[in-house]
Image: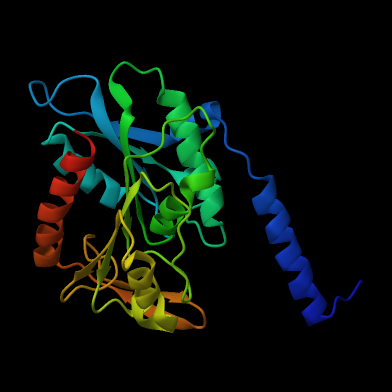
Length: 255
């Protein structure tokens, strides 16, 4: 039996994770079974619709995207929710790099680029937590011939004190963060998002009062990261306040 020293085993595991992540490829055909579409009801808006693409948070699932998509449909805006975890045959996205998730968005955009229901020149990208980070780092995911998002909406993004973005100047960025968000407080991630936006045209940081991580969700839970646990907790009042702002942001960007 071959014995691998613990430190070396960790290096091997890290290397394997990097290789697997680097080898992940997403094609329009592979993304096809892993998207869900919400269209406005008949008489609301007109085709081709503006559209919002959603990328998932770490835990997987598109319940948040579906809730927001149903609301946007009332304004004549369609939505496309991507099952990033399902694409990889996983229940969640722990260990998957945000730039890898952003490639799913590029593939979904390619898949639907000629769909007469949608106006891809008027599209936005939205993500939650790790998905919000992926949305902010999607600037290099699109090919030169693909339309860029008019706006990117990131809910409680960033990682361990970093809140970077690489989007083109013409794409507006809106970050929404709860003032009670423990993940945002950890290592100064929320402050990094605030600094990312300060004094920069087209970049806006929105502090959401009395709100925890996943304030727009329906579930209270704790989850582990960086050797500690963090709390997610819904807040219907905070969600309603953000909804009013977000609808106006989207309507202005996608007109």
